[in-house]
Structures are given as structure tokens and as C-alpha cells.
Length: 68
Image 1 (cartoon, rainbow, N blue to C red):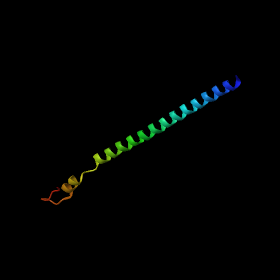
Image 2 (image 1 turned 30 degrees about the vertical axis):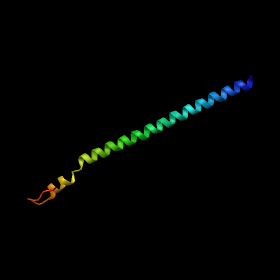
Image 3 (image 1 turned 90 degrees about the vertical axis):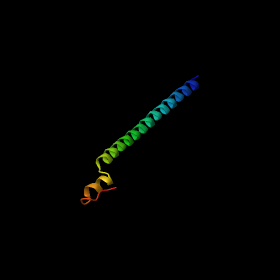
Image 4 (image 1 turned 135 degrees about the vertical axis):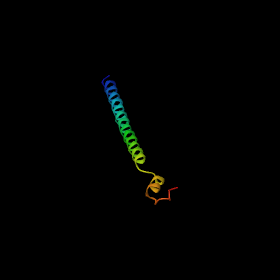
């Protein structure tokens, strides 16, 4: 009887440990996805702020010569 109770306690502990690992892994994945989304937003903001090559050509070209 004691062996069965000990086995049940060990099984419950193992299940709790697996559940804790799954939660930690999910949290880590969520953190990585959030960091990637933030990096993509920063990249998009940068690309929106930087003039395009055509705009730079039109700006820096001498009068009468415009970019593509």
C-alpha cells in the first residue's frame, strides 16, 4: 500500500514538473516572439524614416537631373 502511495506521489510530482517546464517553455517562446515583433516594428519605422534611393537622387541631383 505504501509503495502504491509513493508511486502516486512520484507520478504527481513528475506531472507537476512537466507542467512547469511547459509553462516556462511557452513563456520563453512568447518572449522571443515579442522581441521579434518589436524588432520588426523598429525596422519598419527605420525604413519609413529613411529616404528612398530615388528620393535621395532627386534631392541631391543637380538641377535638371532627377533620379530614376
